[in-house]
Length: 248
Image (cartoon, rainbow, N blue to C red; front, side, top):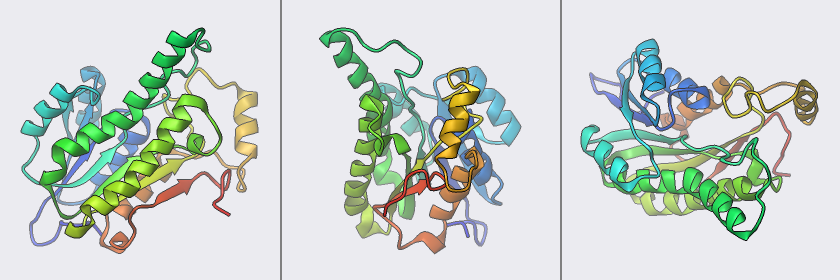
């Protein structure tokens, strides 16, 4: 199923924002593949170290919104990468008061764009030439792009739009680029402490299968997109939300 785990080859995987939640689940799924060498990144070394020890992966401290830090980790990563998963990001305004005044609004929108779009753009820009032919770029979006969730939703919509262009840019080398758009995913730091039991029930009720999403749901799709079976899937946003949002 994996891209380059045959005949002693290694599968080199980078997962940004890989210490917790969805990123950690994705790193775990790839680490379970024989012959995979997985690197996780994030801003908090203590969390990265704990996850790396638990999963048997390697870690690099990096704020992916910093060009200098992205350039620095690029020099420390293997010469060729097979899979890049851009998971770093999140709603920078979640749980905060509504911005008051134009200056505050400006900074709130820039913060979400920086955290969710520029982190991925900088990472791929630094590493694109080193993605092996037939490699994979997997970007993590959000259902927020479809339901009008302010600056965060717009940032995630931009991720999907950028993914389309990336698929065109890299496709001549057999490299695919896709976005995974999760719905409500329980057991992540994204919602922890910010979602009441009543609100969670209301969100789950929007799904067709009356089920909470899990980080493992996203991880399973990420590994599939990295497989040879997904070689003709590119430029797509794949929704994982139990039917809370459907394309038709």
